Image 1: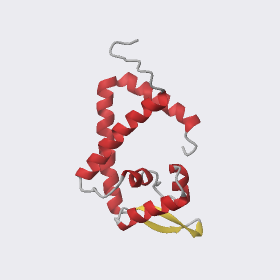
Image 2: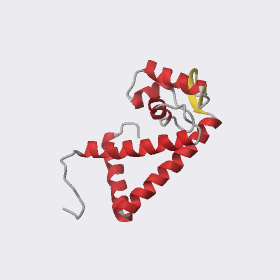
Image 3: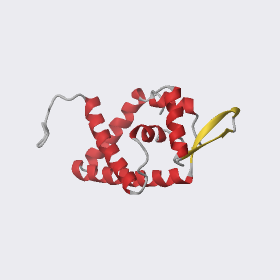
Image 4: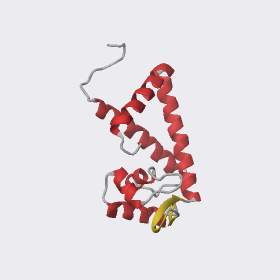
Length: 149
């Protein structure tokens, strides 16, 4: 075992989740500190799944593994707070897309900066080579774990 490494018996999924939660906490703290303090974790997790051209509520629900009703409720809250809007889907007049507003884009920009800061810290801790290997391994793992990639 490498110097400083500890085998505490945690499985890979839990190890990935611990790192994810650490980044998520830092991002939420940064977003709140920038004045976007009215977004809950549940709303943020759904918000993060909205594509650049908009996403249907049914797709958001599927990706987040929540009911369509829960997704619609969270979108309603985000819409009232000014982060998203519903717009007609150009490919289906009956459907609506959830799109990010200017306020939402400003919050996303803060989140992206926080993500970059965390990744930079992790890279300093792990080293560039280990970070690169980790990114490649997790990207490959996504091939068999993420049906929405």
